[in-house]
Length: 349
Image 1: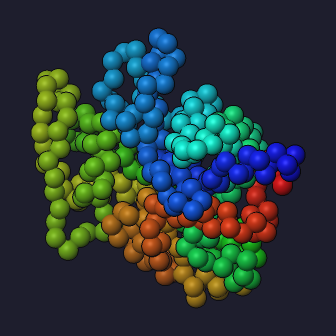
Image 2 (image 1 turned 90 degrees about the vertical axis):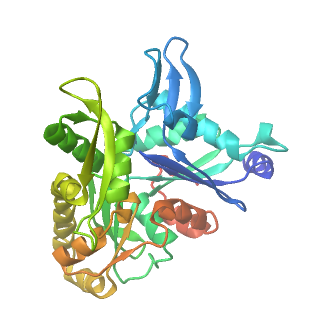
């Protein structure tokens, strides 16, 4: 087995993968982050053929004819369509292993998974990666990987708090001595904010917009607190009354109204996670503050809103979108720590 491992290892570049609901990022050992693409697959339902994966498939969302579906095979951070997820992973793995010896390439793969996923859900991720061509799979909880990616000393006795708000899940974890002391995983995150915006514009303007338009509104004028200068943008969609195209102007105050209930829900869960944490660890968090990472960290002034509500200083990760994959990259170089925090259901060694 070890001989085979060395043989396949000679032709492979080990990978770290952040398998997200919204985006998949892949780190290739000695090359860096080579893939950062939407977790979207376009399938021809007549032939079951994969037409496009990632960025190319994302361009098709909301524009496909009846026999083509552009779908996200992960929902709330877990696999909803095993076969499509396997094909998506195979596409990304093959893309990273191009070159001499690619036929024999079977890399070791570290994948970040959300907190509180079941044993069955973890096994599904592991099986999908193995079927896609990995020779070994290690699963790491995403907030732990994000903390490692931010160069935080997770093996220290001093408590570390991480709030990782991605597309499908928000993971809240308090880490000490290489393990999670207190945790909470919510199926409320960036996608929920997009749905809030879509619902608000439908209810108040009788305008139907798509997922990509809602995402653009969130990025450009979404905020957790009023900005110094008011923001507004034009939005185009289908008028629900006439069925014809229509353009409106929305401002930051309206979008804040749309998303505030979801933001408060997340903050309430951050508070409840702190409340059930041992007092000595809470003292560490008060001194050190918490790390905000994931795509949600990019929402304007969300860090300030959390800090005001909890009384704990909040730091935004240096590059919040790549925190988890950078953590998996660091673990490729630290075998001892990888074995300690591996949550793969088969406990691979």
